Amino acid sequence: MANERVSFSDHDLRDDGETRTLAIRVKSEARRLGFDVVGIARADVSLDRDAEHYESFIAAQRHGEMHWLARNADVRARLDGDGVLRGAKSVVCVARRYHRATEDDASQPETARAIAHYARGRDYHGFLRRKVRLLAKFLRRLGTPESPVLARPLCDDAPVLERAWAARAGLGFVGKNGMLIVPGVGSMVLLGEVVTTLRLEADSAIAGRCGSCTRCLDACPTGAFVAPFVLDARRCISYLTIEHPGVIPLALRDATGTHLFGCDDCQTVCPFNAGPGAHGPDGDRAGGPFAPLERWSRVRLEDLLSMDETAWRAVSEGSPLKRAGRAGLARNAAIVLANRGDPAALPALRAVAKKVGQDETVREAAAWACQQLGTGKAQP
Image (tube, rainbow, N blue to C red; front, side, top):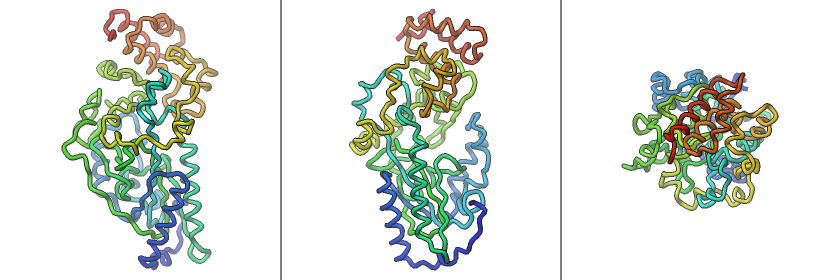
């Protein structure tokens, strides 16, 4: 699709009234599909400033082992080339909130509370991609045989700077922790885009509203923020527990705390996540896609240490936790057990540390946890 070439002159000739009417129709459809926020930006104008910020991030090697982030650098600055969609004129940016009310957390299973909010329920990629694809289908129907409309849906599957595009489309502003903050909704949102050859009226970006607040920067347990708006992913707990494939550095293990998969610390302290609009739709509280999976009431951290293939499938199926891999999740569980300071976990940890054929990353983490618990260093 990205290499398909057609004439776009008819789309360019649309007047302001028509582009506004079309934008209203597209936004209405996006909301009907269940997106909480929708905005539109021009796709044929480069993200010069944000692209420079990205290039500095890569040049400083702050992306760690996430090598795919360094690829397709030329594609990330704009959307209207062959890398995304040739001749694109507009990008429709959408957001779906996932934050659950904080009072619900205390009643959730212990294992669920060690998982970032977005990952406690079903893997969002499946249902979010379906919705984005339906929105792209709607856009294509706005074309005619003489003037066809191309539309490419995106949801974590293309090299785009999605927060930058969302900010340009007026969904919100990028906070000092690098997260998109949507006023009235917060930063706990999932993003998607539809890039299209259809010219739509663009929205205006909104100014940042962080002011002098540094709560997100101060809350990071590992000091992952080099400066406001500058994250070193190599120190970020979300990176360490999800994307990092090897041994977690000793200097960062205590600070990892009880985070099994991901981290919300820089978001939960944000004032924009404190309002009633940030707590998500009632459907999520009643068993929606972001409600904790039932399995977390049965799976203990000790169970994650030595899963066979059958157990791993049962734990990871349909869950974002699959991203960390069986060994990565076991490694994380060992570190969390040590940081919880419960000597009752020692037998399970010792068995893993001594198990012949055990993954070396898991064995090392279990041995470290045994040492911490045995010496009392991890005691609260």
